[in-house]
Each structure stands twice: as C-alpha cells, then as structure tokens.
Image (cartoon, rainbow, N blue to C red; front, top):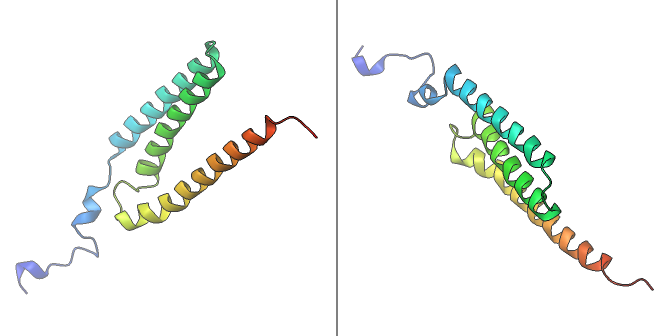
Length: 111
C-alpha cells in the first residue's frame, strides 16, 4: 500500500478548515458587542430614519456572522451559500417593493 492510499476516515482536507472554539468565542463576543450597540442606538434619541437605518445595518452584520460561522456557510461550498442567499435576496426585494407600494398608497387622500 502506498503512502497516498492512506484512509483518513472519510475526511478530506476541506474538513480541517472549520473554525476552532476560539473563533466561535470571538464571534460570540462580536455579536454581544453588536447587540449592545443596537441597544445604545435605540436608547439615544435618533430621528426615526437614522434609527431604522442603523438598526438595519447592525442587524445585517449580526445576520452575516450567524450565517457565516454558526451555520458554517463561510466554510461550505458556494453552492450552499447561493441556495441560502437567493431566496433571502428575493424576499428582501419583495418586502422593499411592498413597502414602497403600500407607503405610496397610504399617503393618498381617502375616497
């Protein structure tokens, strides 16, 4: 048996790229800091437009960390990321479209 035919128990080199416990702890600390920032943004008196924008940005960053590390999308094949992200992008586009449509209708005077 040659040196190249050694059985690694079904694991390939891709399996070694997964994060360690330290990475998970660092991501958890980052999520905690982002949550504290969200609370701080809410407590301070920002205008409604700025408040919503900041909360959406902070939430998107938190979503990235959770999806990339805890759902392992950062370390898996790009195909899985596309299967996950495509419907998400479509849902966000539909929500924005409905928001603009219904926002425009609500500003018209009634019958």
